[in-house]
Image (tube, rainbow, N blue to C red; front, side):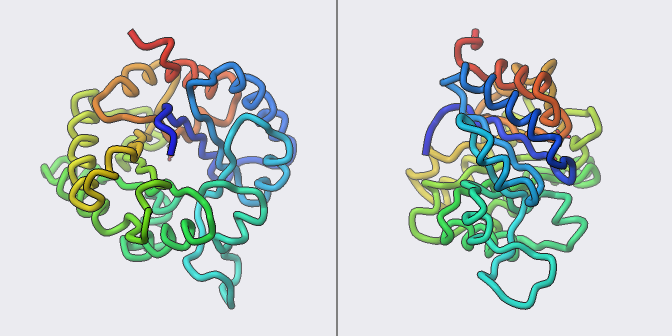
Length: 252
Ligand code: PGA
């Protein structure tokens, strides 16, 4: 997989067809940044149209079911995302872990199904505020990594991790750059235990209140290979400002 900074917008449950105009603006602007890999995960209802509307950015799903098909009303299988034009999927987002009781085991099964379907995958992990306050953040997150990442052959080639502290999502609060760096190093170490040398190619994204104002600093932390962006990805201006901050030309 590429080693360019990877900036992924997660639109969550936001966006109807009118939002395709924003995606087109993002796509046009992204064409100017050939040293950054840019992608959007719109609601599933927009994947197909969005994929047809863009040329320079990746398009992905926000979740998938582990099973390939069956009696699972309302759910979406990984091969369906692929068929709709997705090239990646986010799994294990904290809003799904907390809201739908998704366990590490379920997240791993989803990630493996996604790889099997030919998608790349972003596995999300992150501690709650109580877990951080009690000094358990690294233990929680490395345990999530160990339990949630795919174990299938060559999995490391098509895998990214997103470290998203639950307390930083949508709150405007962010960890210190030092805390981000040390968590990303702990995640890297855990990945090395699992994938040995192949772990080096896995990008570890930071997510949680990434904005134009803090992006350059957060992206400069050790072992940070990109960002997973929620709120600020809904408008082209704020999202592209983050892409701009990720551009190596900007690095000091
Ligand atoms: P936020 O969301 O950027 O709005 O904090 C990040 C995420 O949940 O991926």
